[in-house]
Image (cartoon, rainbow, N blue to C red):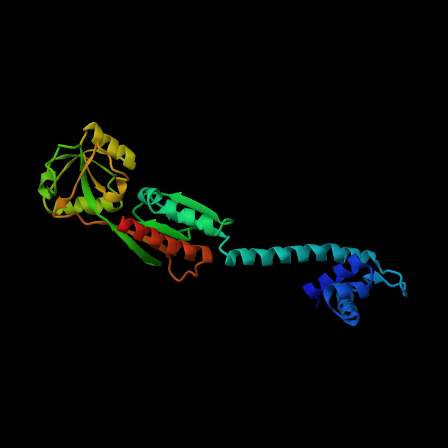
Length: 291
């Protein structure tokens, strides 16, 4: 049975015109080149070169031309395979990451920037969705505001505490008692994900705000607070920057913080790119905690 090295020898003989020059190019002895061509001829069932003898160059036969054409294609694909493996090991592969709004605005930008700097040829695909149940179908990693369920593994990145967002002067400076939220007009995120945990926490304490507007968008939420429609309970990372039109108040007692995790399929062997992304996510989360 022939091997790729036999096809490489066939191509060298065809290119160089003699067994001797092909042997010199490949670093083989001439007898080794002859043996490898003999293996190919046995596999192909006929002569691949006409050998006129003496100093005259060999001539490829019609059968040899067929084997050479397909052989070069196999060698090209083998080179592409080797290159693909090398690129994969270097991190220049594809990674699919699930995310949600807050992570897209805070953790992901420095993480993506560093991935791009370290692996310029990598292919990064992001998929943003607010969902109660993490679905990692087709994803390497997923950011989620809760721990892993069955069949998944997780890395907790940080706690994102809740604050009361209001217009300046609507509440006295400092922490606001939680009971103040009873019957207070609030704008809020939809009752999915960690918002459910927050509302259940209030309900068990017989605190029932009036939810006058719900939106998935952080900017829409804050815009309605600025407009005076109501205050908002928001994770701290949802309020990206200092805004003179907004005042942030701690709550007493505190609400359960939103926990941000990175999830992946249990037992999965990470690609070098995915492994690097996990470390960068950990680092970006630590930077957020420091700042």
